[in-house]
Image 1: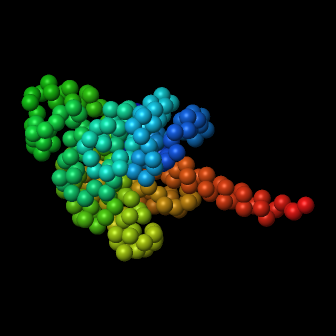
Image 2: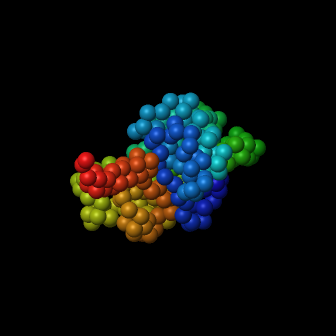
Image 3: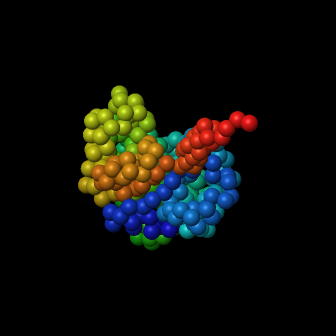
Amino acid sequence: MRGQELKQQLKAGKPVFGVCMEGYGQPRWPKFFANYAPIDYVFLDSEHAPANRETIAWACQCYAAYGIAPLVRIPDISASQAAMVLDAGAHGVIVPYLETVEQAREVVGAAKYRPLKGAVLAEAVASGTFPNAETKQYLDARNVDSVLVVMIESTPGIANLPDILAVGGIDAVMIGPHDLSINLGVPEQYEHPRFIEALDAVIGACKRAGVGAGMHIPYTDAKSSAAVFNRGMTFISFRGDTLFIAEALRHELGYLRSAIKTV
């Protein structure tokens, strides 16, 4: 699936499925997913995982070659960081901890109107005014695969979400559950009524704006995850490489330690 197809699925209200990868320098992962665990996109994390520009570019090209849309979470809210990963071959950008309309305009400009810059870009994002129709057509064609996902991880972000989405150009909103739970005063209490209320507020705002909603799921089993996603989420991000490996080792190695007798 390319970025354009991902956007079409989200706009139609259909779910898209992906996993988060931190150790994406391993060349076997793209082929593994394509052959054994088909996913629509991969969430490459460069906020919490160490990655240089070359590694990001290499990983994006590899996943795209297997029909998996590479989306890169950038380290912070930065137009230059967004442009860098898109230039490297990403089909989309995931922007962390977005809270304001001004921040939204900055990343929308970078993700949807490359290579427009400066005052002309600012006017285009604010009012939809471009130098001419030909320029608008060119920018739309050039950025057809650019998916923009913003992360809401705080109460100010939730309060400002309707205005943020009114900027346009955002394809999905992803909840950052860990930071949001702390911001709400209920650290890692993902079933707390205050946390669930916040989820529903984000989902409702996304539905009204016609964009996808999702969450980087904190649960360790598919059943619990499905219950949350069925509240109205379509941007499905289920766990990731480090969690999968940790769970398998904890379970299997733990069993072996108890089952194998000492000689």
